[in-house]
Length: 126
Image 1 (cartoon, rainbow, N blue to C red):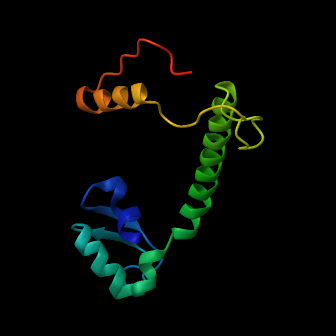
Image 2: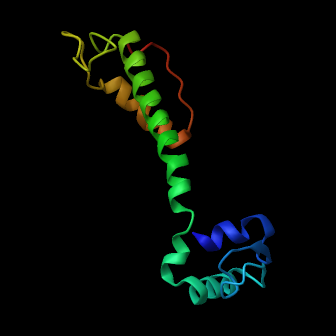
């Protein structure tokens, strides 16, 4: 983690300010590349030094993916409800009497789509 965050803005080589590197001096640190950054970090902080900054990134990414997943699932329910496949957008209970399987014509359309990449339907599937 440390290698990525310290060299991200500077390409493969660059400068970074560190409290720990080189050898707890707290001065500007110069890296000649990603491997040099990796070596200096291991030498000064050990293996755990590579995970610095992970908590901050997780605090940023986990809520984002939670909101994205929840939004996708809710939109999926709305689409299934609007197309008549489920009884309510608040549940996944299937609508009675609606055939959920693909019909032979739909299977042929799907096979054509995978071969050509174009989906041309003459009749609506519902």
